[in-house]
Length: 438
Image (tube, rainbow, N blue to C red; front, side, top):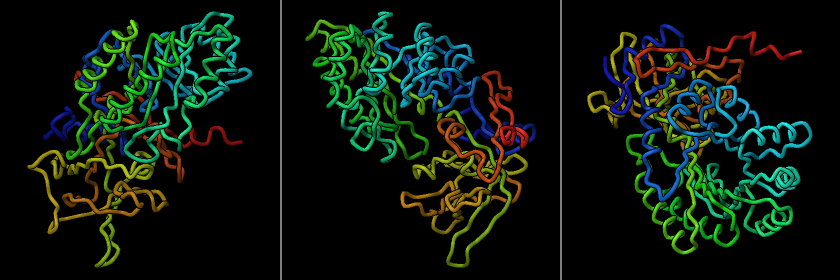
C-alpha cells in the first residue's frame, strides 16, 4: 500500500476497501486532515479574541459539521436551511452566524426571529433585510451584524470575487450611511462588521481588506465590538500552488487591531470564516475507469470515469484544477502528482482528459479557462482501475448538479482518525430521486 500524498493518511488500501464496500463513485474524507486544519486555524495569532467559523456551504454533511464543531469551530451559514441543518447536527443557534442573500418575510421571518431569540447572530446584507428585522431587533434590544460591500474584491476567478461591482453581496458603501442612520433611529446597535472579498483571495488583497474594513468601522460603526475579515483563505490543491500563510495573515491582523485599539481605545474581537481551507484537501472523489476513447490521430485521448461533473463541477464552473491519482485494481499507485516515484506523462508520455459519463461536453475534469479540454500528464489506466480526484472535500458534494441524466448522489465515507471507514451519507436511490414527482 502507498499513501496518495504526503499530507493525508488515505492510502491505496483505503481506496480499494472503500470502493469494495460502497461502490463508486464516492467521496472519501480524511478526519485527521480536518482536525489538523481546525487546530491550525485556532492557533492563528490574535490581538484579542478570535472566533473561527466554518463556512458550511463548503460541506454541509451532518457528520462533517459535528467533527468541525467538536474541534472548536463555530458555523457560518448562508441560508435559513443551512441554519436548520446545523441545528439538526446538534449545533446551538448561539454558535451560528447567518449571512444570506435571502430576505425572509412572512413565516420565514417569524422562523428567523425565533432563531435569533435562541442566540443566532443575524448578519444583515441589504437595506431590505435591515428594514425587515429592524422593529424586532429594536423591541428585543438585539444587536445586529452587517456585511459591507467594499467595492473591491479578489478571487481565483471572476465568479469567486464577492467584493467588486459585479457582485451584490452586502450593504454597499454608498448605502452605509443610510443603513447606520436607520439603525440609530431605531435604537439598534450594529456590533459586528463583516467584509468578505472572495474565495481564494490573493493574500495581499486579504491584507488590504483588513485595512479597509478597520477604516470603515472607525468611520461608521461606533458600536462594533467584533470584526469579521471573511473567508477565502487560499488553499493549495495542486503541487504547484501555494496556500495562504495563515500565521502571517494572523500576525498582520493582530498588528492592525492593536494599532486600531491604541488609536481608538476599542479592542475588537476578530472572526474569520474559512470553508475551503478546512475541507478541500481532506476529501477525495473515488471513481472507476469505465471506458477509453480517442478522437483520431490528431485528437485527444479520453479516459471515461463513472463519476464526473455530478461529483465535482468545479472544473466546469471555475476551470479549477484538481490533482489526480491512478490506483490499479490490485492496489498499486500508478500515478500521483505528489509522489515523484509515481509520476508519468510528459511530452513523450501519456496524456489524457478525464471525463465523466454525463451527456454534456462540459463534463470534464480538465477544462481550461476557455472551456476547452486540456490533456493532463498521467500514467495510462486500464478499465476497472481507479481514478481518484483530490481536493474534493469542499464545494464538491454541495455544489454539483448531482441528478443530471438521473445519476444518483454519491455516498460520503469518512476515514476516521481511528483508521476505520464509516458511511456518513448513503448513496441516493432512484426511489429517492423521484419521490417528489406527482
